[in-house]
Amino acid sequence: MKIDNSQLLRFTTAGSVDDGKSTLIGRLLYDSKSIFEDQLEAVENTSKQKGHEGVDLALFTDGLRDEREQGITIDVAYRYFTTPRRKFIIADTPGHIQYTRNMVTGASTANAALILVDARHGVIEQTKRHAFIASLLNIPHVIVCVNKMDLVDYAQESFRAITEDFEEFASKMLISDIRYIPISALNGDNVVNRSENMSWYQGAPLLHTLETMHISSDINKVDARFPVQTVLRPQSKEHLDYRGYAGRISSGVFRPGDKVSVLPSGFSSVIKAIDGPNGSLEEAFAPMSVSITLEDDIDISRGDMIVRTNNQPEATQDLEVMLCWLNNKPSQPRAKYSILHTTNDQKAMIKEIVHKIDIQTLNRVPADGELQMNDICKVRIRTTKPLMVDVYRENRTTGSLVLVDDATNETVAAGMIV
Ligand SMILES: Nc1nc2c(ncn2[C@@H]2O[C@H](COP(=O)(O)OP(=O)(O)OP(=O)(O)O)[C@@H](O)[C@H]2O)c(=O)[nH]1
Image (cartoon, rainbow, N blue to C red; front, side, top):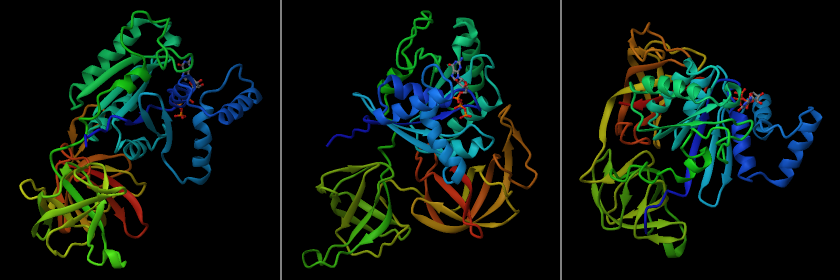
């Protein structure tokens, strides 16, 4: 079996309020003919009622938004669409003030981030924040869409100035792949179809860029990590002796015959078989969900991790983490939180705030002892039991964690292990 993740691309959109995210997504769906007839009809009718000449493209995503605003149930709306080349999942996050939280939520599994910039306003603080978060989350591909080019007469000079500004800021960060596309979401320039108004732009339109982007090397295929979700012990006659460890492979490849260790106990064994939904597999890799059986009887439970014996994560109670504070309630000094890491759930304390990051300059600034909504800080965390961790840069799953307030059960922070 070949490792092929090239079929599905997840991307997120970021931009400040009114930069045109909804219009852009609407344009992508509309021009790539990914909109269902009934949806189209509903949007056409509403557009007419609202006095629009054509279709109001933003309505395609605003339906979801309304739901969100009434129920406050979701911060991120997911949209799916397919072209002959690829499947796409868009995490659409609103551009309100809680930008950091929403972007972190929407972007944590993304292959690509689309950062919208209004051609009239250029690179603003929000743009920098989004770029920084994209870099922090290690999103492999960033596409800067300079939107509303129609409002600057499709001038190459406006595009060039913004590109240079962004490039200058981004040079202080680690983003491996940045591309720039001048677009008009409203008029459809360079979204699905090549613009006739910007012949000076030699690159591909947005959709083609998304369709052809090389993403199969985005995942870590080296470090085999399998956090156990649950132990399967079917009681049926023919499976009486079956004891499988079920979960989702975080990274790397596993095969029957592999010498593995179970953490934190450290006991080792050999993989007997790997079962998927359609029977046994000769090979399994991230992000597949499988059940693994071992040659030896070992006591394994949820939260344990199966890894290859000759390539192990670090087991530690002391973590250095880049933390994004996502809650209205600030952090309390030395307060205890639940820490969620892969399938593990432990208690943890923020021992020390090392420094804050000033998003404008990317400089480190002293922290005043409290973490507030949207703050990005480096902290030291101590957990009650060891966690099996990798550095986030190398592993987005085993390198990330979430802090939860036990009293309210709310997520208060997302962290990347450094
Ligand atoms: N002239 C012009 N207007 C645009 C373009 N793209 C979007 N707009 C307009 O900008 C306004 C905001 O667009 P939206 O798509 O609602 O913006 P948004 O970023 O989704 O806004 P939030 O959801 O509130 O964050 C609307 O009036 C759009 O018609 C463009 O390329 N050119």
